[in-house]
Image (tube, rainbow, N blue to C red; front, top):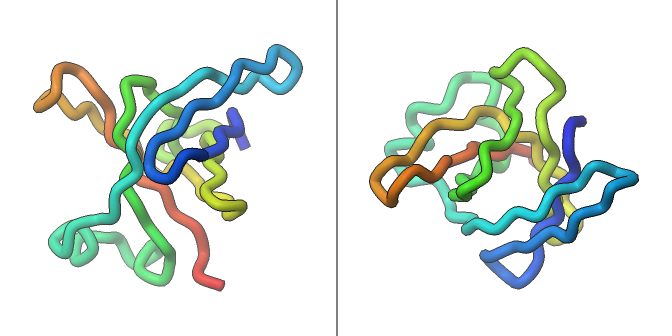
Length: 102
């Protein structure tokens, strides 16, 4: 994985900087996918738990061609699948996170 990000405080998160591990200070909001977004998931993600993370920080995704960032939510590891600009709120990003269903 790329950078490890830990989600705390319910739907909002703050990660303290750790120079050893390369963790970043990031804030954002985690929300479930809309029903339309779920219908549009590619076959490889339909059997995964998938959520959107809105943040001002651009995360590294699997579609970037490098090791994607990892986000830990309530002890569960998610992979950043893709990142898109979300300009509706003034230059933020929305990152799609996924993890295999247990």
